[in-house]
Length: 341
Image (cartoon, rainbow, N blue to C red):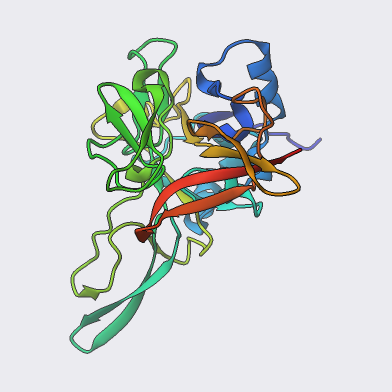
């Protein structure tokens, strides 16, 4: 009789990738919503329809060596390892996110920030090489992420986005904090309009402009962009975000993947990534003549479920970008045109 061996696995880390276009209910934010309808929206949500999630080759090799597994689920990514596996404190798990559907950018905030590939030359003596960078790509990591809620309490939540910066914000859809309130820029600076989203402590930490890291190129590099990530063979050119998880965080063990003995923490950490749905000015025009009939006074969120106001809501793809007549490089507002009878 052949010997049968069973290996018990335990979760090492879970990352939930939550897009608010699909989860919010009109003007009600998913994270602050309660009740059965919230649970229903989460049950039918499937991030695999929106994003392609790829571990890097190094992460695949690392998981093989650990005899671990990575599973892409309806809500994100789960990594599990053998229960008794002792893991080195210097391991790193990296995977990339790329758009799976063409219209994702139409209803996702910050997608107007055009991602471009920049080649920078590296010359030292007779040696010449080219490094490639991708601009406007967020790097989301438990090494720099932030938390909401009281430490040790059940409602404590860990986010892979950084804490919001203290700067004023410069571009449409930037997020800034003022007196504990989260503000969303509705136009480019100078003179940017803002709209309050709510108390910072009560909202999730959304992916924002501060998640795009500054590039610090090595010496002898000419032409590197200011912000973004370096493209390596592990990062495909269509990368829209990078998830980077380290085993231990020196300044905050709450974000660690490992317990004191080097095995997986129990319970494992659950990290969240929140993609914002776009807010636009809703402009209602006659279906036959295109004449404006009504304009909502404030920008409203685009959502699949519910309505932000008691009027017809726009198609997710009905985005128009209005520029400042005095400066064609400055976005004055984002508009959703809604034809009505």
